[in-house]
Image: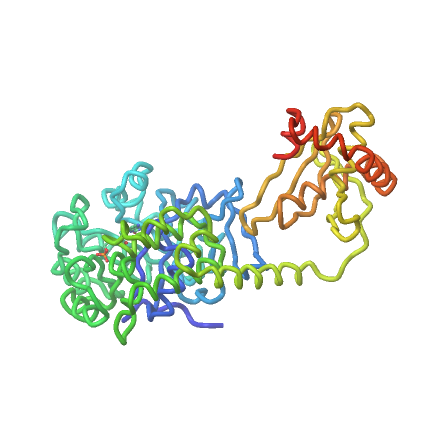
Length: 469
Ligand code: FNR
């Protein structure tokens, strides 16, 4: 087993909401960051998540009840990723830390964020006014998890108070203290107070990670050392400089931004990062060029395909999708005979069935059989409701026929297939002989060929609904 993560003499990617998701963290590591912090994740939301091993992406996902992936991580960063949480509650902090501790290298508590979403629950910079709570949270975490615990603070208006707080934090057993050298009310444009960071570094024995130098001190890798020396700290943490160009971590010098953006996109595609999140990060890299032709294309993209197209990387998109599809298919394993067990899931009748396209004649599908059967029985047309889950974008559909619901318990790779699978379940549960209906349907289709032209001209409301469902 690898040793505990050390925070001495490191350069880190700072925690950044929306920016510090998996593609950015992996990119920062590739370019030379030693440690990468995830974006701040709020304990209440994380506490509701379940841990899912995503075999297709080869990631570990922490998935919210609404199927949103709150935190995605992978083996490649396991020894280097710090999970930063927003918390004001020791018990909840511990519950969340325990949920993620096997998948991350350390746990950090945000005590420096002055933004309302963080401070309103008493989290972030609001904690700085409650040292007892800071102590309670950190003590609980340090004694309750097996990975190192750190925290990130801002400086207090008086140097003495800052040092007193830092010493108190050190006593809880944290592995490091990150110090953003600004007061709570100072904005990112204000100069960083290296003298405060240096004083904290001298006052405690644990490594101090200097932060706040992106705007005027750190432009390239060479400046990292200068910032570290100016702040007299063991380590450095970069936020904006890395957000603007993650290759700032590269000792051989930064790379052209366009190349970096393409590498970012490749990670985003490989790990199925949400397109809007990728778009946001790419726009941060573009900065004042966000209104350029490329910037406008990136901003207009609505999904990963369009984003790839905007960056002239459609081939990379297709290749990645093909590789992920192949993996998905391989994981499904050899074909199993269909599971005939009928089960009830609430008011929905389910079977574990897949839609196998080749089992049906070219122009015929289970949906068509079901529609035809419903018409002959003078029933309302079947309606389909489909949901997509976040972790692998798979679909599941429920069909309603005569006020009864049917669904396959297996998820499909497209909405179309999911609807077909639900139709198969309905046909099998109701015992409708598919091939028989199919023949009837085929004959009817041939007989009604002339009528079809008429129909196409003026679809009924029901037909319009079917086409779009
Ligand atoms: C931040 N920062 C921040 N800090 C934190 O502890 N948790 C977080 O989630 C965030 N989110 C965040 C998002 C974005 C877009 C920015 C720019 C900043 C603050 C950040 O980690 C850092 O403390 C400051 O940006 C100062 O460091 P730099 O930018 O001068 O290197």
